[in-house]
Amino acid sequence: MLNQLDGSLAQLQVDTKQLHQRLQRLTENKSCQQNAQCKILAVGHRPCGGPEQYLVYSSQTTDEKLLAITSERYKKLKQEQQQRLGLRSTCQIMPQPVAACQQQQCALLP
Image 1 (cartoon, rainbow, N blue to C red):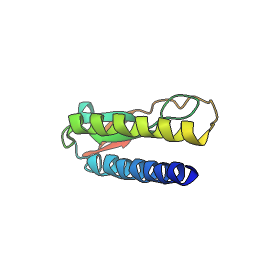
Image 2: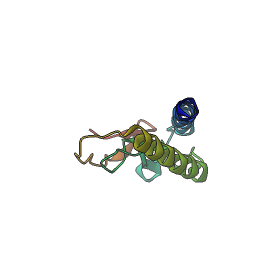
Image 3: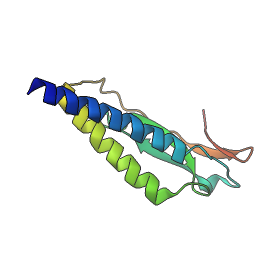
């Protein structure tokens, strides 16, 4: 039974890594013409609540529907992984950053 649990947990870790890589690929082309095309996506889940990170992307070059589906699946797998491992995190709130179109690329503002 323990090996079965370890195997499914290992698969869960592989799946979350692959989904995170897919999120990176979906958002890698950040080309933009105006600020309104630059969006922020809350990604993943922290054990204490809230996202683990934010990704900036361009609505001009990103399939937003596929991105939303991938992001939701990733969040659910991260929650399951954290529950099964009994993970905890700091409970500080990560403020959502602001994105803008700078030199025709979406970027996070400092």
